[in-house]
Image (tube, rainbow, N blue to C red):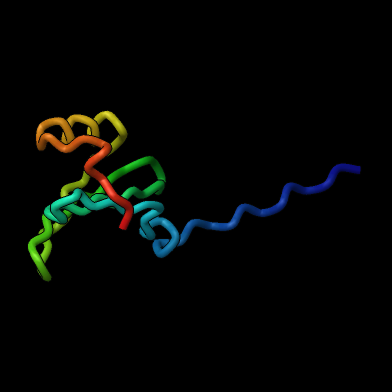
Length: 81
């Protein structure tokens, strides 16, 4: 007798849009949020004190690596938020 596979829990908007990781650069000019829904994507926010920009969405690690290089930010410059 075979058992039915357990029903997969649906992914809700709240689950999909909660960042799995958040980083800031040392100067706190940029905030980077990583999301895994449904693929790996990153939201980049320019920050200035209490205000921040609308997000720039990057899709995949390659896009994030290119963005970091064009802004002269190394991985050592990032700190968890």
